[in-house]
Structure formats: structure tokens, C-alpha cells
Amino acid sequence: MGGSKEEKEREAEIKEKARKVKKLMDEVSRYLQNETVTMEGKTKEKTIQYFSGGALVDVLMSSKWTEENEDLFIETRHEATEFCTGLLSNEFFIALKLKSKKKITDGESSKSKKKSKPLKFDVINDAEDFFDSPDMYYMWKYSPMGIWAYIIGGGLLLGVVAMALVPVWPGEAQVAFQYITNGSGVVVGVFFALLIVRLILFVMVWACSKGVYHFWLLPNINEDKLGIMETLKPLYSLDNYYEEKERKERRKKRKELRDLSGSEVTSAADDKKNI
Image (cartoon, rainbow, N blue to C red; front, top):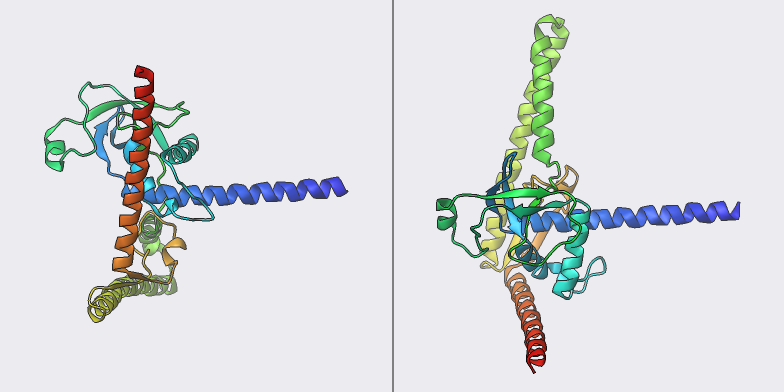
């Protein structure tokens, strides 16, 4: 009995740890998917949005996870690369192999991107390693259902079924359907009213603080890549614009210092080889 109890506790602990890791990966993936610059390309099946491994690591190294964090703390590009390898293994994104010879760098202007033909890729489904390189390409596979997908999908389904059955409904049911339709209109109206109230509150706080503070009621309400419950959290956010700007500058400086120290080490190693 004792051994069985210990095994159950161990299994519960493993499941809880796996749940936390999955939740963390979901959070980081959403951030990377929103912040990483993508470009248009093509595979045999469809048009895609791709990004380079180097660009993904750059975004991760400028994120909040490079600061002291109990869930995830990334100090070096090597650690960022290892984390991205985990995302690749869990199929958050897919590796690509370039077919055409011409390459486009991450810093290319949007005007030249529009003029140039999309690059063509082959999909590599069995890739195991992620590479921090501007010449290695990937595309996102992770695409969580957002709140609008649920609302629009469910509304369309219910609407089609209801409209098809209205003629055969008894009088009471038709009246009930009319009330439901009117209620749905009220819900949509309340949602748009909430958006207007959010904007008014933001402008008031921004004006009273002379642009220092940014206040948002339900800051994630417009995030279509979040689940229904996640869009309602947190209830509000109040950010100091200049503090946030300073944090981003500090992250950028730390990244530049790490890159500089890494290049110095590489240069010293090359000099040693030449000697």
C-alpha cells in the first residue's frame, strides 16, 4: 500500500510538473509568435509566414525571461537555443528547408519584400535540433483558438440551425428565438461599449499623468490567440511607460554585451588557432 501511495504521489507530481511546463511553453510561444518578424514564403501546399532561427532567439533574449524569473530564466543565447529546441520538439513550430537560392535577411525593408518573389521551402517534419542562425528557417504550427474563433464559430452554427428550424417551431419557440436574437445583439453592444470605455479610461489616465502611465481595463480582451478565460485576466494593467522603456533598453544592452563577449571569445579562439 505504501509503495502504491508513493507511486501515485510521484505520478501526480510528474503530471503537475508537465502541466506547468506546457503552460509556460504556451505563454512563451504566444509571445514569440506575436513579436517575431515573419516573411511570406511558399511550400508545396500553401503560402506560409516563416522566420529565421536567429530572429527568434533575438526576440527571446530581449524578453522578460532574461530577467530573474522563477519559472524561466534565460541568461545566454545557448540557453535560449535549448529552450527553442524544446519548442521545436513539442511541435510549436516546424523546420523548413530552403529550395530557392536567393535569401532574404531579417533586416530587409518591407518594400523590397513586396517586390521580391516569395521563397520556396520544403517542410522538415522530423527535425530535432533548433539552430540560432539567420539562414535556418521555421514556420509556426502553434495556433491556439482565440475568443473570436469561439464566438464567431458558435454563433454561426447556432444561427444556421435556428434559421433552418424557425418555420416549424411552435409560436412560443419563435418568440423565445426572437428574445435570444435580441439578447445576442445586446451582448455584442455591451462588448463594443466596453471597448469604448477602455479607450476613454486609457485617455483619461494618460492625460492626467502626462503620458507616464498607461491604464488598460481587461488588457487582453483583444488578444484573439488567447482562450476565453485568459482574455479576462488580468482585470486591469497599469504600466509606467518610462520604466517599461528603460527595462527594454536594459535588456537590449545586456544582449549587446553578451553578443560582444561571445564574439571576443570566438575571436580569441581563432587567433589561438592561427598561432
